[in-house]
Length: 137
Image 1 (cartoon, helix red, strand yellow):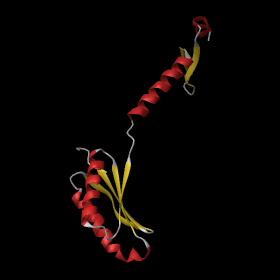
Image 2 (cartoon, rainbow, N blue to C red):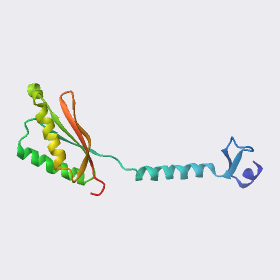
Image 3 (cartoon, helix red, strand yellow):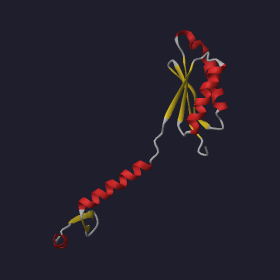
Image 4 (cartoon, rainbow, N blue to C red):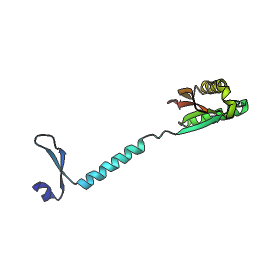
């Protein structure tokens, strides 16, 4: 402690359970500042996952399907995850098979851009499917 006071810095306990306890003579405020800076740099490097959604109806026309498929390709090329879902309104829930076929067709068409993370699953009035981008693209 005398050495720390002499130099005008702090005595920081590194490992209190060791015998004898390990301490270090340093400027504690500067240490906290540098640690905060390191944490901020690591956080900036972390990738943020973007999820884009594409909505279909069970009776979606070919032209609309192609149009939405192009958007899906663009999203996957940009590195975003894709959440494709078929929304069933009213009595259209009887077309569950059509919705599943539509999503599986989309998965097959986008096979070269991404891989299916979750197969089509019915949740309430919507059937969802997740596609993650391929790393190489």
